[in-house]
Image 1 (tube, helix red, strand yellow):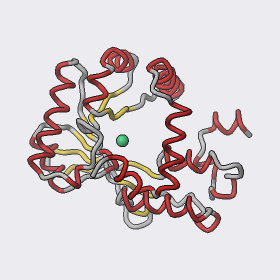
Image 2 (cartoon, helix red, strand yellow; image 1 turned 90 degrees about the vertical axis):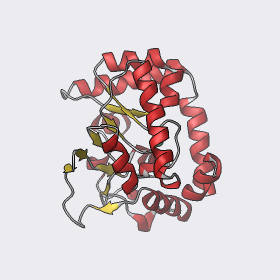
Image 3 (tube, protein in one colour; image 1 turned 90 degrees about the horizontal axis):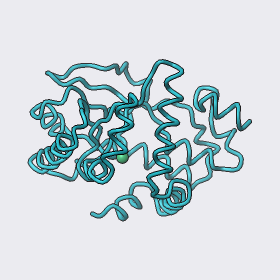
Image 4 (cartoon, protein in one colour; image 1 turned 180 degrees about the horizontal axis):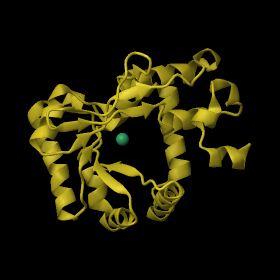
Length: 230
Ligand SMILES: [Zn+2]
């Protein structure tokens, strides 16, 4: 399945079209704008003595080694996000191993240190965990913990459908199901990730009247965004 048909299937045609438009108009593919955006994230977190992790596919690192080396020098951690951006749930274990090794080779050739792996679409399998352990990763970050911050009843049907498709895609576990903290499985550290993620939230924020959709937006929207846009 190619990326376009996969995205339509998992997001719905309406949400896929909007996302494509957003990516093309807001982010373009210019390295200068990406450079600026990455540095904004790094400097925003520096105020809190924190630094971001950017998970990047091997092919993207191969195309932009200077940019990525520079943001790594500025304190960002770079993690591996596959070789190409595909879903490991559709790959055999040996194919997962091959593509992960290809990604590692790019990181080694470009001398970007890495310790962790996040799957595209958070699409991990039990075989993925074995591959990460065998290839010596310190951690993976894929288990998606869902925080109940979106008022589904107020979402227009296409948005609701897209939101629910994303939850299914990410194999989301509600945060009230059980306590999920970073934990070891053998030698591999598993670090959960919180959703809704930025893409899911931005889809809502671009709505004209998005306030009622979010149950407790002080907890969801970064303070700087709130202060400058309220
Ligand atoms: Zn991704």
